[in-house]
Length: 319
Length: 290
Image (cartoon, rainbow over all chains, first blue to last red; front, side, top):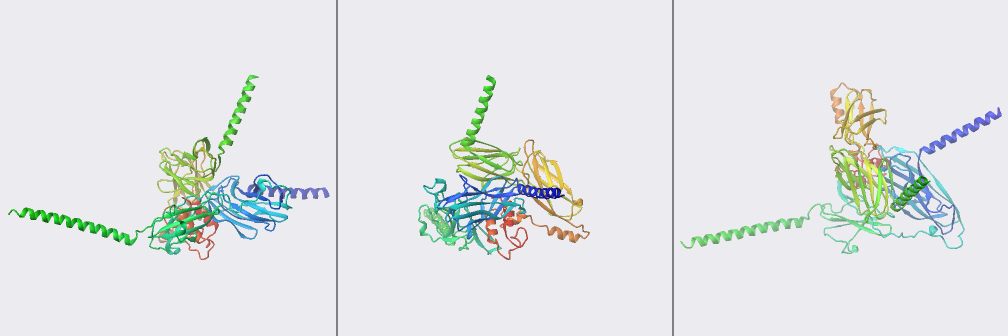
């Protein structure tokens, strides 16, 4: 009797664990991996480079949202990189929102279907002895099905033990990441667009823009509107009064007679400037242009008139 | 003995060649559909995509969501698209087609890692069919026509309601296919349809989702007229906020303006839940044209 009870209990437990394992095996996965040598122990002052991957389990997805939690007493965030990410458009670029919490949400046009797509990578610095837990939570992954159906996703966490500073030189793999990333590549070229919509800025004209940076992401955008065409490859950027802006940006010149310059600045300070031509020709120059054409026509008519008049006079003189 | 040695040498040579190509070119592709990938050393990085779509359709190549190349497919549906001078790195590519009725296919996506100094060929892409319905609202008992374009003579499958009803047919030589669906046996409510195509060697991904509403039978002609007038706008038409037949950065900017704000206007909210959240962005990006 005792034996059959134990057997029943064991079978029940095995069934539950099997179900859980099967369930886990089917769900998509957001998981962190250490780049380079796998270590569970870090010395004070050492760096750890982690990569966040996504396994879609043969589903086509287009949206990933989530948070990365970390023990902010033991490790500090050094930098976040979007390089080679499967996500091309960020609704919320990865950033610290609260202590020990990085939020991110991004989109993949065309979708992603694969076992190990890189979402982002992060560097942490060991700053205090103790246990450091780094994990992914509040993940929300949506299918590329036109409805935004949520895909069940499991996420993982890793644990690291931060110990005393190690004796000797820190290995290259564990050297602290530079505060300012070694990046001299400007953001990719981009094309801003001017448009209007009744549900935005009371139907006024606005400019939309989105630049991508292959390394560490865009830091911010600036905008400058000018009636004059400026070649910023020759002219100094400081000569213009740039305004910090986000997309969409309500245009100051609603007559659309200005050149609109949009500057994208990445986290390393590299810049890319894109320009939109005025939609409407400057009214003064427009007016001046037509006046000039009118004056030329009048002058030409006068010349013709004088020429004809003189010829007639010559013909009539012999009589 | 000599034969064994010969086989052994062949295996070693083959393995060595495979390893050398894999290491030196390092071009990795994660794809939704089955495609072939080859690479060869070249002075400038180039990526070339070839495959089949509906004949005389506009085929677009997206790089991280932006249109980088487009061309019209030939009479047999074949197409070629390319990007030159692409820096080394990992990129997300997408290929989709737009048919003669301006209906867009699903987007085939590819994640490709390119090393310095290679030409990468991504071939045998089979673009999914286009699919549309003649009505978005139909009274039960009437027929609704599901039609589209795909590769010539392709074996088309239309899944209604995720496989509850499976319709199979062959596309014509010009790639057109259509099916008149009798709605008598369908439940009252919203239904969806998707199509994919099979050739002798490959199976495509799914077309864009088409939704239609089956309503109660009505004897009142006025009610029917009202129903026709109230035909719902297609979701992707709704996502094209500025009505320029493209879903791109402008529409993304408009949606992001309303992200997590209250009192969202009905024509901005893509899933009609009075909120702009990631679900709306997922729908917008599904409709993305670049």
